[in-house]
Length: 199
Image (cartoon, rainbow, N blue to C red; front, top):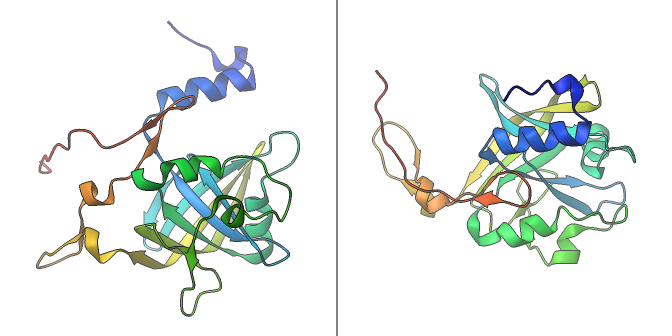
């Protein structure tokens, strides 16, 4: 079957892409609202961009009623925290995708605990094993989407998921136990891990 995307509705394109490009990592993004409360939302159009400088990207779509609060918050304040969602928090992470009134904090609504980070304007989620503290590097308009490129300034990594190694830090993926996004309402956990040396 050959599908011409120009003949599909936006909704059909979205569902085709999200079921084809799988699994996708989930960025659980914390940002600051204009009343200084905190917004928390998941994004699966997310990935690493570069190591020098250390950059990640998140794509945020205007769905007709405007952009999510996350976009406004990052645009206006210039910083945010990306958490890697894990299996233990998947239900709460999924809950934070629900639309709430502006400045209604998901942290309070869903009972998500945060802790302050010394020298950084935003807290991080206590239970999250990885949190990347980012400043805005560039915001790129792409049609009906804005791609936010963030520069990672600091990374919190739970010491319990780090495997000792002589020359570099190794994060144990089984202990991190991340969830990833599939199509529709589906999420994936880690299955078999295959270790293949580079040729």
